[in-house]
Image (cartoon, rainbow, N blue to C red; front, side, top):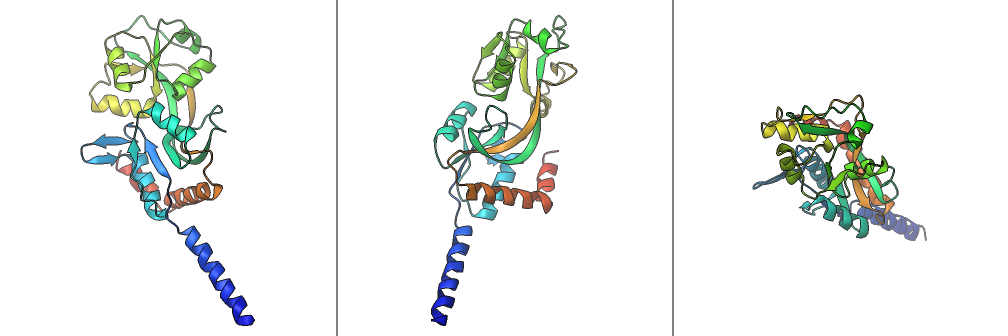
Length: 246
């Protein structure tokens, strides 16, 4: 009897260990967004891509990260079990739509304008409400926040590069976008003197960036990803990844 009890205990412990170390089947989705997610002919890289790949390696997730336009990736993750989308701003409106792992980084949403538009003097959100057109992509945090702030001069656009082109050509007045990522892009394109941030006292919005998981994701999976991310931060790997893109 005693031997049977010991055997059952060993089997139980072994089973639990196998569950804890089982391959993770979450499918990560992302969009191109330098310096966080960079897509080239050689594959994917970037701060958050490298970080997610490190999490995958440590937990046994072998899924290849897939790149989609933001709106499609958001829709898939919102509606299909087994998907996760990064990087995603954790806002009040989205809080209960997803489960969250992070933070991965922080973000600051500001307006940009064409440097030659001396007629655009924007000191406040009320000033921004008076311009003719502000381009935003649907389902983005910029769209959500400006709608929340009762902006009615929004032009919905799905292509970020097209938004930049329209700003260069003075076809729109303002473009609200994350400061650090957009400045990185402008410098790479040598456009930092052509397209400039609007100097308001406060940004449109500040928050942190997370990995958003479909709401049906088991809590055990969320805890596993969060625990692994915390370990990556504490053992110095996170800082090493950041240094690659500075």
